[in-house]
Amino acid sequence: MTSLERCQAAIRHQIPDRVPVDLHNFLVTLHYAGLPMAPALQDGDLLAEAQLKFWRDFGQDMLLVENGVVAQACGCGVEYFDDGPPQVAEHVLAGGLEGIGRLEVPDSFTTPPMDQVLKAVRLLSRELGDRVFIVGRADQGPGALAMALRGYERFVLDLATFEKPELIHQLLDFCVRVQVRYALPLREAGAHGTATGGLGVSLLSPDLYRRVEQPYERRFIQTVSCPDFAAALHICGDATPILGEMVATGAPILELDCKTDLRRAKETLRGKATLLGPVNPELLWLASEPQEVEDAAHEALGILAPGGGLILGPGCALGYNTPPDNIRTMVETAWKYGAYHPDGRLKHQP
Ligand SMILES: [Zn+2]
Image (tube, rainbow, N blue to C red):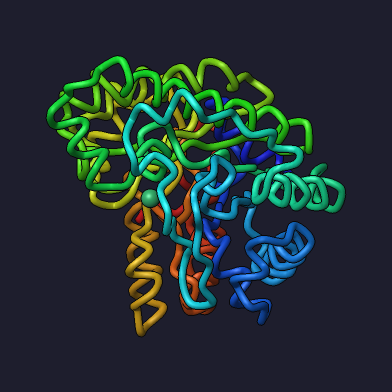
């Protein structure tokens, strides 16, 4: 099986030859390639070059391609750093929710940084698109993008008081349209799938998630996802209380991290969605012995791999200076212990 076929089998609820591996590594690739992150994150050629180098050295099955800050394309000021992810420094809706009426959905073909991510996906697709699964990530999700446009505290307050429900919904509607207008060109550029990063229950109450965030995530997924273009829903933190609602978005892939109850997740997702994750990125960053990484990845395989439905990887983005040896250990653990019998049992039960 090629990596592409292996990922597609996992997403389509078939049994691949072994568990596929992804790496949430857009920052690490640049650091590993020795590129200064601030300019490289804004340059499609460098984003692609770094992904390619990393793939040649690590051989993961799925590439996650992104730059981290869609909000820039919507008029926010963004600061780039050489030692961390970019951050929104000026929020375009800081003056009030009313400003939403003046915002226009950006053209992703011509607006930085979307145009550069499109370029990177195009280049990677030309090199690897026939054998490796490429995810062009239309991050951030509706609530996360709204928060970036408005400013974190201000949006939390908007939601807590809910004094202007129409404007809140208008803003979330705008964010979905931004994402759709990004995701469909990513598909055209050669991506086999996309992703949206939702706001989870570390920031919203489960009730607020159900009422305000989930319907917009669902709309994004329902608009862009299809059998040939799988959309993933990424939610950080403990997603256990909202697993049912996440599945109900129709997302064929749910990206979950290690704080979620993995046994509950396995039961809830069975036959409905493929889990991508859940290895703790902090462990990958901090582990001084590769054995710690192998043990964590092996344990996750034991819970999540039987019967299919797993793409093994970090549960969230890796820190830019995550030790390459730890990443290699995670990939090799899937090679070592992730092989399947045709009936979906693992050949090496933990
Ligand atoms: Zn995350």
